[in-house]
Image 1: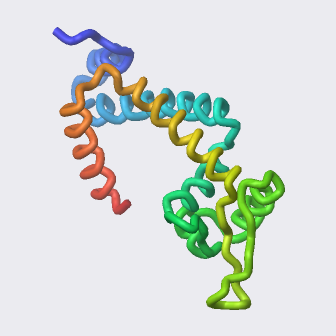
Image 2: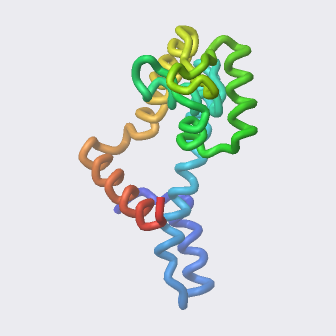
Image 3: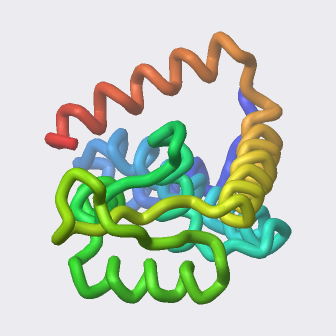
Length: 164
């Protein structure tokens, strides 16, 4: 018999009190919620180790994933990070002040600008992704590669079903 966790105890208690209800959703989603809390703590620790804030990682990683020359328009950054225009302007300003990104005029459109990753920004995001993957790998140590693939597929189906 598998080891019991706190969700098992909660569901058993509810089952005694409300045997008329199906607690299947609670069994799944309470574990997802608890996992999300562990993941949030692990991610914060990984970013702290790298000296990068989560919001900084979002912007820097969008630029890094773009490939050379590691630059995007503010509009594309908005689409990839799902923040408002004002928020993105503030974030780019703060990252530029830290020397992690630079702005330049878009050569294809003299009215537009491009945000580019500096060498310091690339080093910071590369360190942050390595630390993040290490932290996430630690969370998954009790799950085989095949089980990770299965879990990933199930979660993908769930998320796509929600319209994501």
